[in-house]
Length: 327
Image 1 (tube, rainbow, N blue to C red):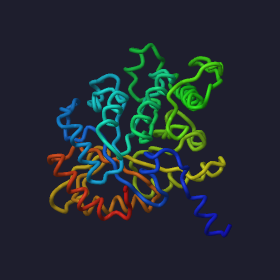
Image 2: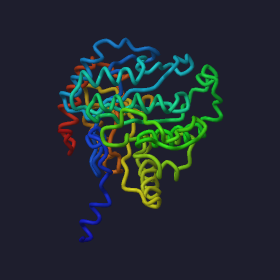
Image 3: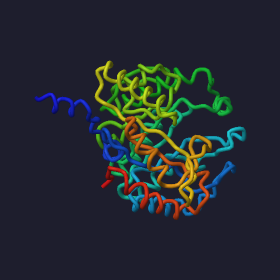
Image 4: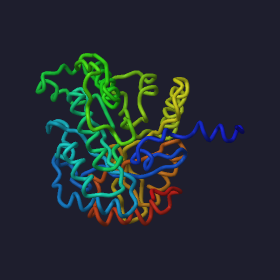
């Protein structure tokens, strides 16, 4: 094998399911959306009007994926109830109403759910969508939720690791393992199985784990927006740890809140993102691609226009100008 071929081989991401492959290609960037696809500003609870129709519109316009959150309780101090609907029930609904767009979670709070239920629900959504599920997972950051489920917030890091191990084993045939969540003896199986044999699992932020653990165990990393210099360093360090662990190359994604203006202004900062015109957003996305980000999930919560208008503007003036394709 030539040096060029070997380098190309090392850069590839693992060929997991169809949803994962639609989102992630080395050295290229795709764009997705956080649901609900609607502006609801400082309100904690969205209206959920036309939520399926907007996901279907996003699919038709070429967005690569949509992302659902896991928010069990509406905690007033956080001012955000997510998409309100249970993520796994909603995944099944979206699977039936779409054809090719990736369905992602960002992210399932593993310490708050038994991993057997997560494994079965996630594999079901993956099968119903013909392999379009990408499961983002996290340790959780809302301390108020844990007492309601009789779980110690301080133990969430340990529970995350044990849940993660259980999920990985549950995808195998007649799994055998034992940890704090229970014992799988190898004498019974958990069905259905994921379409590609294993679910793509993306780890969110730190999830109370070491950087080396995240690099070794995840199928990719969801991180937060940072300045270009700092993000480049974080991504470089992550991929060096992946390589040191003997793992194949793995993707990186980040969320971004936007308020897309009609005029070419900005960018000016908003919560975890910025207000700008399409050209400034396009420059940002091209910069992120150059830094090694493979997917950006846009959140329209603070947008100033009707979602349908914003989606079409994004498709015509941003997606069309990115050197990538989701077809």
